[in-house]
Image (tube, rainbow, N blue to C red):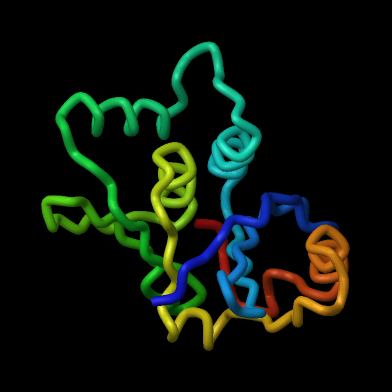
Length: 157
């Protein structure tokens, strides 16, 4: 497993499909995952530190975990099958729960939980962009100009 940081959420044009881009910590691979608009909003809100007037689903889940004394210790992006990414929520109790990566990422950002990607997922869907090229924002823009969802055979999570 390789630790991943969330670079950000953007809308891929011309399909108008949201994408979350993760970056391998200590590496040069980026992992693009096409997601739904609701999850894109939830991830963007968490990254920007925005708190909605009423809790979104991921805020509610975080509050429930705190209320029942459960700690989320890891989010793992574990697999990519037939264009669909799979993730797991790992709790301090040892319990693991299957989740969509977009939901898992939104929850991880709210709880400060580290996100990991399996070697297989990064080998299959990761894109190497060496650090010495340009700053992250420029790399992300170039990245979006060069790919489409069909390049990975992925669909909305």
